Image (cartoon, rainbow, N blue to C red; front, side, top):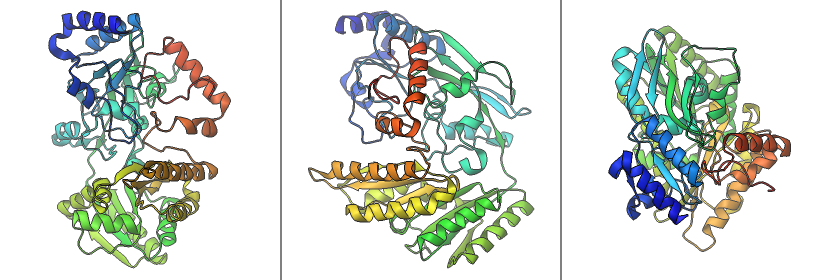
Length: 463
């Protein structure tokens, strides 16, 4: 392996120069994301600036059977970027050019290292935006595609899957493949774009993305809605969705998360009780209609506080508080670790899922605030891990309980964080042996040497 790596570095230096390194501190930075999976140190890190450079790097690795791990911003939560078998990490952050914007067709082409804020800042003057908002401000669009990201706006605008028209992908042997295109639909060939979306770098490395864009809404309004019990809050969500209200975002905070966010983000006027955050997009008349109907439904379910956030700065403060929920949780118990869960169930099963999860949390004796994009049935708990020898084991046992409950209710072990290294053990139960065998067949066909992000997404054969 060392001789192969030395040969790789020597070859790659001819076209990358100092943009490939074995520096220990850089390798350590690329050994983990933001989750709790054990780190994995790569043997080297490369910083390509073009698709062609990525292609040449991957071809060199393929010839030497060296593992390849794609790296964006390192914000993943399930160990996607951890180099569990060593190898070369390819950091795509320098591939951050916006290649083309087509305002008339409402689409654009970007490199994989472009971040969501960067793209939206570029688009703002053209009245367009990319609405997918997974919460991590500096996450890259390539990483979002690789993990099939969604976030707070998915209830109205869909996930990243629905907003990608085409991709440029470097295959395991270095070939460059174009998928999809600029049209909104096509009935030709296999849908390779959707195959690579969510493949977590195990089938190919995404280097460019053709993105669908949306018009910036003419009117936006937000509201907070508080309840004295969780059942009423969840029932409100179900009825709003069943009524067909085109809400842009619905976020749920349980009483523990509300307490944490009130303290951390200085949310004046809110109480530490189950809370919903709403946002409405559209024309002024449409927004008013959506908001009025939502308020009526909430009050019929016993909402005790319903407050509007009309001014942009008030909305920004509200959603920043939601995005800072993780840090608010950490502030509750300084010195504790954190294990973030991610489950999703059919929306009709939300009451059972959330109330059951709260019972599991209470029985565990751990503190685990709950927050979620409940408009599509997706919710998270931030399990605060006590600094004790068995702290992580207790947290992991609770996580497995929560996932098992979601699967029992017809749900999934992950609505948006992906599988990575952390959730491979749940896939057999969720998908069944036959489906996993098909996935393994696809993996073997596209990556016969198994060099692309080994140890991720699919369980080891025989498990």
